[in-house]
Length: 399
Image (cartoon, rainbow, N blue to C red; front, side, top):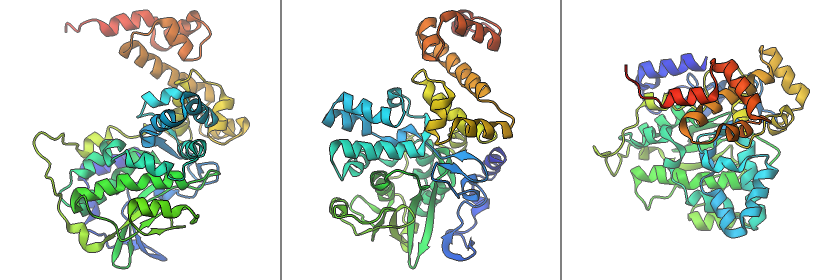
């Protein structure tokens, strides 16, 4: 389904799908919600989540790219030390190697957990805002670069909403009507973790995007967050110089409807990289495969960064018991071992081709006990040994 939808977007280059802006079609019973994505994003068909992070109906795990935590690790390490940072990552069962793999998908609830634990470790109510102020919209990848190249704010937001699934799954970016305003909002599932810090960190990158069109001094008429107001919420308001509305459906900024027609202040020049929709489609967060195997393969790949491949750890990371995870996979015709094998093979090939790591180091990093056990597995996958594969991949192509 997702693949067919992506092909549909690529064929139409968006314009025939959307018609006028803002769209005329709204949700039945919810007259203020604009259906920007109903024909494009699978998340909107199944946005009914359990507290564990699985989307009912599809079995999907809510995921986001690791680049979404910005300079969070550096901020914790600088203010509290490397050991505190390692403890924060360990408590979320995340490998420290994730710092150097920003494109890697990770569970959204773990992302929120990093923000909550970081704030607790530093004792800073504004920790999320501190991280967010060190980020810009560009840190989120090609999908937002494509949106930022649009000539008008309305078109830019339309592009951002339509392609946000390239960065995440299980949450939604939307533009909704609120009287004479339009609220740019990022709504996330509910998990057993505090959302306050994660909500706050989303606001500054949203601001930098909108200010491409409305100027550096522009401020929204109000900002929104999902959490209940606490005594220190005024710190966020003081920093942003804007009224904060709490217990809203997501983190967002309120714009006047008339501002959507504003043109980009600094035009895209010939020296600026032009990101096309086709580039975005090539950079989607996960390949097209049935759920839950598609999302679980991302979790397995994440844990392989730390050499971990046990099913118990994977199940804990996605909030399931081992038997429950195995049952979900069997229902779709998969086994956990098959998913681990696929993830190991893909990572082994990358390490052989893109690094100078020894075969033994690669073996251990993939969770194998010995060089020989890895070599046997690789030969079964590829029909040659790891050393032979590396030599062949580095040989010049004379054809």
